[in-house]
Length: 148
Image (tube, rainbow, N blue to C red; front, side, top):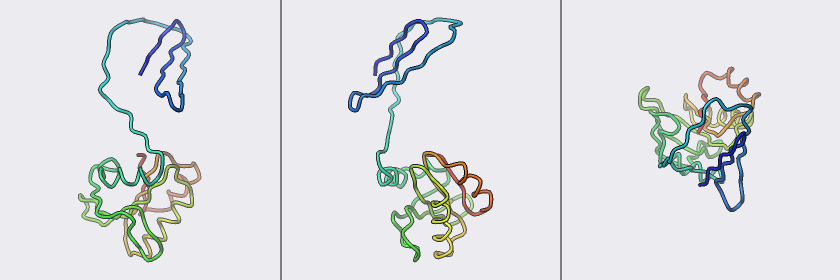
């Protein structure tokens, strides 16, 4: 990773293939500090929903601290839900639908799975969610969205 700073512009180059550049322009600079820094953090990106689903199954606390994942691609009778597990604090079985971007279709899909499987609690786990899906979630007290 290369960090280049000039007066008014900061460029952060993070990837060669494909080439990606983040450019930040400052309107004013109040203070300038120079130092050598080391960042031990790593950036994890998932290219597909399947990769995200696998990572969430292996690290379920990324969804919420009390979720424990038991199974991937669980057959509910109305289709396969991405993850089946338990919310350990409430001792409730939980179905999780994983999406890169969750929309209204993800909510209705998970709602069908919950009814078919006779499960009370569902989670939509996604990078982001559409505004109309967030509005629709207000009508469901059994489905929660978590950003992952």
